[in-house]
Image (tube, rainbow, N blue to C red; front, side, top):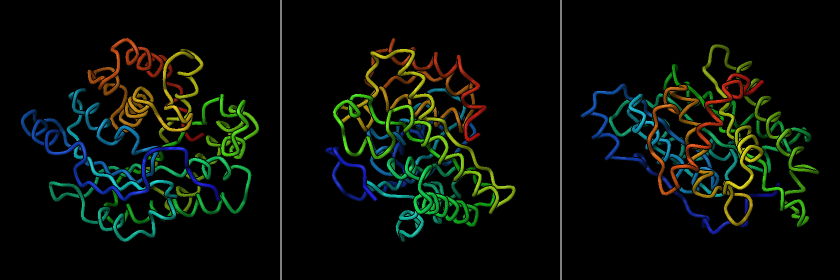
Length: 285
């Protein structure tokens, strides 16, 4: 199985029990908002521009939820590897920085596997088993935990023009890659629901919205130079979608955080999210 590559994000272990951290927690306590404790398990797609910290900033600026953010991220990791990693499992079991269990677990499958799993039985089994195992472990830590499947995006179209081997391994075209990713994530979520009836599982339609934003505003810089990982705006878009999946439309409507991006760019991607609630409604179907 190929891995995510072409990135300057080194193969290092990142483990932070409060990535958005202390500042979010203090502000939350002062504001009296409902608290939400979110753990991220992913790889370089999640690590790019610190998406977990961005989700914390989006939630806090919306004044809808007060975030406690944790993450365990390793380059190219698959869900099955997270499910077998002692450090990831330790963080999942120990809970948030305030000593309480995580309320939400956000998991991100390796990007090539996310596509190949739609057409290859071995890959499909690997993805489904990894996701289902993490759901089981999450429910052991907190039976009421919400599990959010971070659906990744297809690579930039120029990589197909360049005949990138990695891009071609995900599909013959960008559209086929997107379709495969969508299908594989929906199947993984359904397999987990069948194994764990009653579990709260949502697919966060990050890839669907990347596709829609790129189609609506093709000049917006969502991708980094490698055509695979997120640029700053792409990471903010990702954070808005995940935060909206967790906290609802009000989070996106009320968020004022724009990071280091121009205000008008962030407003454009927010408009696409708000104009298309059906993408959230149909996620994972």
